[in-house]
Length: 79
Image (cartoon, helix red, strand yellow):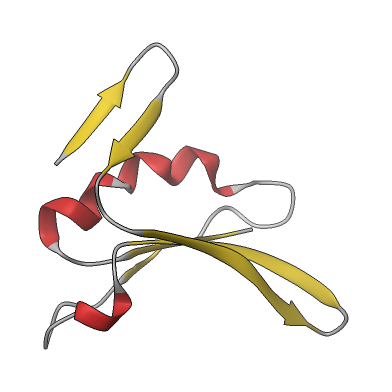
């Protein structure tokens, strides 16, 4: 399940969350995966969120977090 707290605009879900960094050309790119990539079944592709580019972070896409719990498709954020 999930819960949206309007006061802080945070979303809480019981889906597993994994965060880390991926090295790329001497830099690091942060990522968060909500949901479990190992349990994705045929045709249920993960949702890869694409933010507005340099200078625009992923924050405005966090409202998509419940999608993982509701559909079983992991949601992937990056910055």
